[in-house]
Length: 389
Image: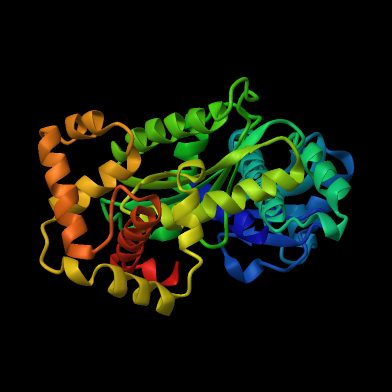
């Protein structure tokens, strides 16, 4: 039993019943008392109570023969049928006995709560360690069997189909409790949302939260990624109602430990890249080219943007939006025009205007990619975290 818990039990109980209360450990040493001067001393009546496992009264005469002992009632504190200490009430024995069962039960309930919280904390730390080990996993380290066993001990099968998701959260209500309390609240909300115990959900040391979602294996290409995307959208809506803004990076499907580690890395890259592009739910499967561009050194990014887009200063955003919409579906101009709510001739006019401004042809694949990459890199540079991407 922790001294802090014992002291809380002694003080709380003493305030309720109006008599002195002390708590001892399994050796009979006082570890909690309303009179803190007695902490650390031996309470002799507790030794007999722990030996027999039965409560005992201490009369005035008996107390007088013992050093530092007052008349009262002493009862064992048991946890899982094992005596772990005692609780004693300093009052006339007949009065103290009336409170004995109540005080003893309160102490045992508080001790059970403490034990439960400790077990829960140890479980959370073990899950976090497992999640971080997956993210640091390298096949050449030859620790695959250890990780798989660690997962099984926690009830997590790391060899089934999963997909990694990295979450970051923002407190829109600016709660006064602080970041740690906010993250704990957010984590509980996420765990309750994903009720399947097969999921592995853990907070990371960098304040992100990782999810290794145990979703049904792919029957069709991209099915798991799509399911994860819709789940993240639903989770985002759910958490926004509680004043929490969610950003998510989604990896790819994985059915082995090496692929699961790779999925986690892709999820983190997708979150960083997608956020720079103004996205909140960022699937790696849709951001492959953008993620590759993010590896270009910052100076080289700026050079490319300045060289390609030097003729676009002061151009309205509609021209940029039109071109990006064209890139998404260049072989269907009618569909592109419809998506922008413009006439097909207007689409052609804007693309020709862009060609005249930049000297690059949007109908030519090489030129088109050159313009697109410059626009994407410019978005990186404008994002507050883009320079480090």
